[in-house]
Amino acid sequence: LVKELLPLLKKGAELRGEARIVHQSSMARRGAGTSASSPGLEASYFEKKGGDLGGDSPGWMGPMSQRYSQSKLANSVFTMALKEKLEGTNVKAVVAAPGVTSTGMLDSAMKSVHRVSFSDSIVSFLLGRVAQSAEDGSMPLLAACFDPSTESGDFWEPENCNNCFGPAVKVKKVDEKSINPDNSKLLWAKSEEAVGRIEI
Image (cartoon, rainbow, N blue to C red; front, side, top):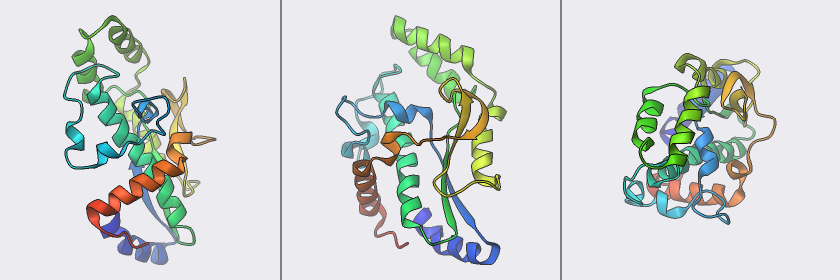
């Protein structure tokens, strides 16, 4: 979608002063990587049938969660790579994460892991205690889209409890996985492998 819309976004930026490409990430991005030595993104998840890896067993650290973490880290990595490539234009690349938010997605995830293990039940209980409303969870995304102070490369997340809930703020330092050059190189190559060369 970025590839197809970028010419129009550039034209819109010339006419109106700026345009924004905003991606939605998640705090789940921090869990991406199947080993301690992994930089986060793993090529196998971005190839054919990558969405089928590991099966569908539930659990906060299970294969379903790992696929979700990979996709959300990919969104933040792509944004940071795009920010570098858009230098010198008025098109901003921005990313946001909602924190722990009470939505149907969280509810169904908590139900699916409730009987998996004691530790999964504890995690579900804690997440349920700190979850904010869907309306509050939308605030980082709205700030990324519309806040006049937003700059390219900004990452908006909730302020409190390790970005779980609270008012939307720009993070002071983007996490290492999102700016890791190996992740950026891998994802950009896999993206162009899928859709063709992305002309900036």
